Image 1 (cartoon, rainbow, N blue to C red):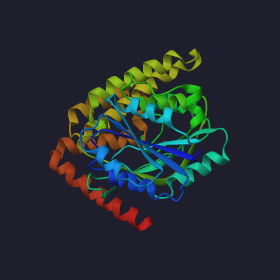
Image 2 (cartoon, rainbow, N blue to C red; image 1 turned 90 degrees about the vertical axis):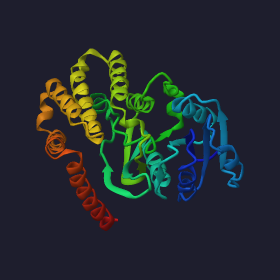
Image 3 (cartoon, rainbow, N blue to C red; image 1 turned 180 degrees about the horizontal axis):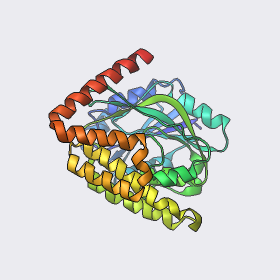
Length: 319
């Protein structure tokens, strides 16, 4: 039985998949299996996979059913004690699996261990942006309030296989099935986190996370689903959940340079959860909206590019 099962859902992802798989094969922890779930691709993945000589790598093909179904297929076929998911366009640093497995080995109450994530451009170049958090232990209430699970991205967590035996598989009807699952895990298990950027998340035009309206509908469905199963003494968190959701959507609107939509979402956030007005994230958002409004997309892009270049240089020095 391998220590870790790595599950890579793939749908027409051959542009990035070879590099993604290579980052797994370079892991310092070598006791793993890789299940590439071909979700109805038409880009030559079967021929490519037939040339892979690594016996730890296996291709499983199915009709196109979506990411949730592909992950579920991987879980059912998995043999590892721990499961790590990896999107077909992302990259892992060499020590990711080793450090996360050590965390789970040493902390029996932990069901999910996350790691920080560095953002890269489509060509693989670091942007200088790093998503990080330090939420560990019993994070149930924090996760419910934020309704974003505090997991950096779909390629960052490692989970005990037994969690899925207890909680079931991913919800195929959910637009954000991964966040739904991470929240479900938080209701029964502790979280751990490796406080290093061991995942590189690739930003490109096809990222689902840029579709604000679909994300709003998906998160609204998730919030309502979550609160239906909660005890009444914590239902007061519901407006806070929506407030944090609107902040998140405002930032996504900034990414698409729609300052009017960003301003609308920021007003909704402040109305539902006024304490957010004093948070650093809301203040930064207000500045970003003002810059985009006053200087336009080109001016905003110049300032953002300068900031990212500065962060990239600082990150390079730190590493």
